[in-house]
Length: 221
Image (cartoon, rainbow, N blue to C red; front, top):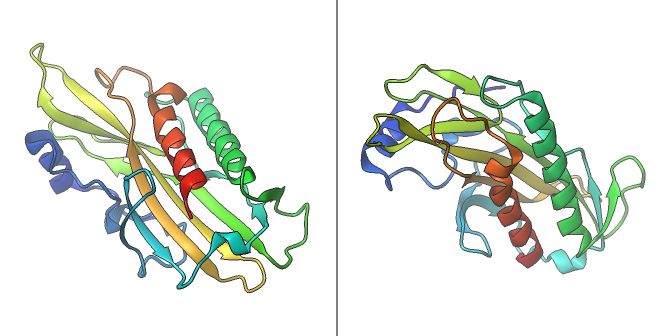
């Protein structure tokens, strides 16, 4: 079930106070992609990024050899907007899927779900780029999925507002033998700033967020 994403207090804090904005995904920004968020706790990724995470006690990824990957797409379904068009959404989805699979492929034998049977020592990856609705103070509210555009800290000398890009990702690893989750992560990352609401969001705006996630996948133990 899709939940409301309007968090005017958080956005006002980002507008006026800069660094007080939450660095992790807030509960009202959860998409519903994961079946259960109640066990998530603040944690730090291998590269030092704040995340919300839960791990099964005693989890050791070295106990697994294979990974089955479900399609990595948008949840909810992405809709083009004035600021991010269909080509950019397609490029973002393709790059994310390619890079995440490649990162896991450096530590597991990766198979597309449906092309191989779940067996022992096998994990199943469910992952999606999720979205939020944003309302910037003094600006027209609009929805962009999966990108949240948030007004930045201050008005520039010219009177225009810079805007930041945020990418939200939710993922879980399931033990293929039991069907139960062993790891769940909810993460947001900040992309490049945009000069105004007319500037287009592109893959390049958010590529650094995906690259950071990939580095953490490779380093996670």
